[in-house]
Image 1 (tube, rainbow, N blue to C red):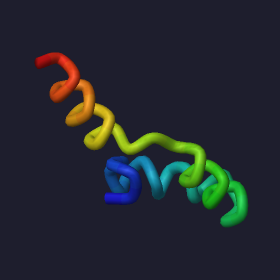
Image 2 (image 1 turned 30 degrees about the vertical axis):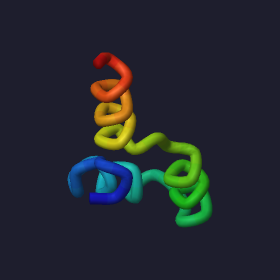
Image 3 (image 1 turned 60 degrees about the vertical axis):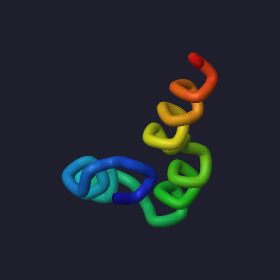
Length: 44
């Protein structure tokens, strides 16, 4: 889902944040799946 976060986490954030704040948070977040894949490649 969005940036690797499950729907329930987005729904919880949406309940207490404005849309503009959600956009900022999404833009500043790091996609965990991508970082994990990069780290695995660097491990080799």
